[in-house]
Image (cartoon, rainbow, N blue to C red; front, side):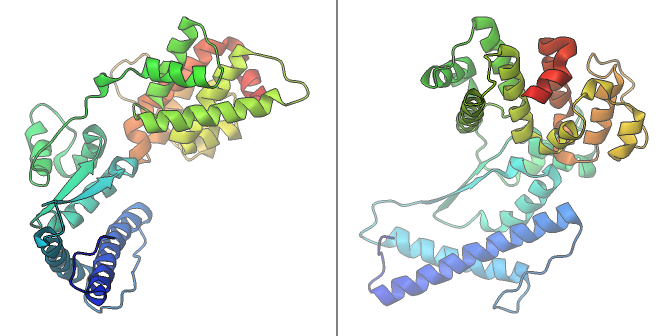
Length: 327
């Protein structure tokens, strides 16, 4: 909102053009995402009759013009404008790649720095249709795609903080006491669901605390560590894998899922990798794996989902369905 133009009218005109420019770029990204995800050809109505690509080229010039004026202004102590692009890895990987390709045309504007916060291992899945499954032999092709877009790659040092300490600190704040062994189980559920982002972990814990307090206020509430762990695990699944959570809601005895249920959820044939895997030797695991193959987001996370539910089974034993019902 700082005014780097000689008069208010000029500032308002530039700000309006700049805002429209960002909306057009956002509209283009949205169109790509909707078309890719739904298969529908979504047209976006814009005041300017030019195509979206022409619009982006025009907007690029607008942003370049505005950035130069801001940077050159005597009142401005900074010589860069920074744009943050976040959460690309939260959408389907193929869509994220297409959005990157669509927006890369504005990433070389003078005096502007674009920071992309993405999970490389997730987004890279979107290139498999182009290069095939990633191997040691073709990894260079995958890297080359990002090298053409990203000039300075930087990996966030996730090891700089410990999830265990963050989780324990949040639980202590909420008055939740657990044994060391239980903390380890909760930590593993966090890793398998919401992941390592502190902000996501805090929201997860806050939601768990709210639901736990609601249960405590119930007339027939009795403290039950198994039910608490079940609630925590199911919440993690609901937040991270809502499609899987809906399946569990539909039939919570997931250990007894069979081919009949598989057909109900659209899995007509069960095909799993030939190599042996400890989490693909039971029918319910195979059904989940096959179901996940239909969705790029779930496909990447299929084994984490199966491992999460195995954690629940190992922790709750034969009573898993009954405890899930009570949770």
